[in-house]
Amino acid sequence: MASGKIMRLAFKKFSTRKLHGTADRRSNWRDLMKRELESGKRENPEESNLVCIYRVPSNMRMVEPKAYRPNNISIGPCHHGSPKLQNMEVLKRNFYRRLFNPNNGAKLDEAFKFLEEQESNVRRCYMEDIKLSSDEFLQMMLVDASFIIQLFKDLSLHEFRQVPSLSRWIVPIIRRELIMLENQIPMFVLNKLFELSSVDATSSQPCMSLKASALRFFYPLLQVDSNISPEYEKGDEKLRGLHFLDLLRSSIRPKIEGEKPRGAQHQMVRSITELMEAGVRIKADESRQLLDITFGKKWGFLRELTIPPLNINDHRGTVFRNIVAFEKCHKECNPDVTTYLFFFNGLINSADDVSLLHYKGVLHHSLGNDNIVSELINNITKEIVRDKHESYLHKVVNDAHLYFNSFYARKRASLVHHYLTSWVVGVSTIGALLVLYLTFIQTVFGFAGALKALENKSFPSLLVDAFCTPFRGTPISKMEGESSSQNDATKLEK
Image 1 (cartoon, helix red, strand yellow):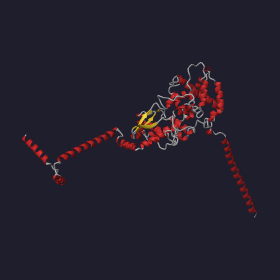
Image 2 (tube, one colour):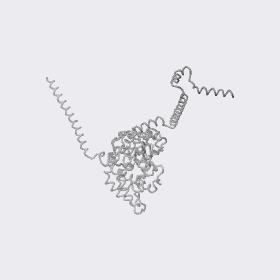
Image 3 (tube, one colour):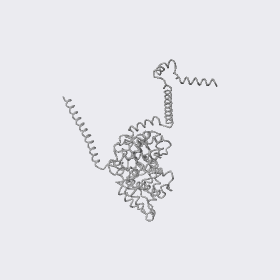
Image 4 (tube, one colour):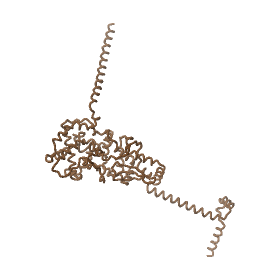
């Protein structure tokens, strides 16, 4: 009896301790979740309206990592302090000392004050939480911005051809790495420091604006030796630019007119080979901006697809990959460049398509062979989901599909594809048609001669000859027999 009472007391004590432990754990996780809600009330860097510089998503990075990661120079906090990028730190500090030399009238104290006042806003421009202290962050921002501004000033003095203080091989590398998404500085920081460093009463030469210099420097990445280049004018809202990558992207955006500039595009455009087989004429127009593509009626049943020339000189597609990454990360921009790349991805299915575009003057490259270009174009949009409802090329693609599915286009494409795919097949097809035509002519003349030979016979005798031909051979008319006998006699007399 006593033992049973002891067991009940022990069980009750154990149960009470277990319940208290459960209650403690429950209260702990509840408190954690409440604190999470309270911390969420504070501004989240990802939700800030100032955020414009992002880490490239991992699914895009794994396709071509080197297109997003600098190998020579770091700008901004994303790759600051990387051991392999320390060689360029000496050069950046040299450019800083040149820019803020007291003799050039620069207002260094105003630059200090501006950066200190704007530090929190500058930090909020980056999606990630920056681990640098305030002194480290401000020092890095001043040195990196000074390097860029002094570089543009040197380039402007030498018509953007060469910087005397730099080796020739380093300028193209700097151009390629300064356009990377993770290597950006907010434009408002660069604009302010550019204004402060441009105050020089002794200078008689007008200074090119920062955005104009940036476009002059970066545009050759897209169109080398182009007849046109985007010009920046003061007050141009289209080219506001959150940073250099966004500025370059804005400069090539299409000028879309109409009530619905962007719409649904559920299908990809046909390859260039298929379009040309269906009777679409391809035209390269150097007077247009890069993304300005049109599709319209040429004459009769034929249509014309007009595309500005595209230059591909980077085997990693660095510029396009980083612009696409920015369009995917930044919620306040339309995916126009992404749509453009998906359009080219549809046009190019093989090296033959690249060859056709090159022959038409639409695509220029220096990557060795057409297979490399085909793989590059097709891989740029890899691991990216196409936005089917925000396409600025929806009218071009949809009109091209309507034409391609017409009766004339389908029949023409089938004829060209099967019988005129190359000059060898074309010559063979024409030869076969010529032989068929000559055979038809021979048959017609033979039939006419047979009718003339049999025109003096009655219908019953023709019917009898037709039935008896297998047994006694082809009948010879009387006139033919007499003519042959006379010819034989003449030969014997001779």
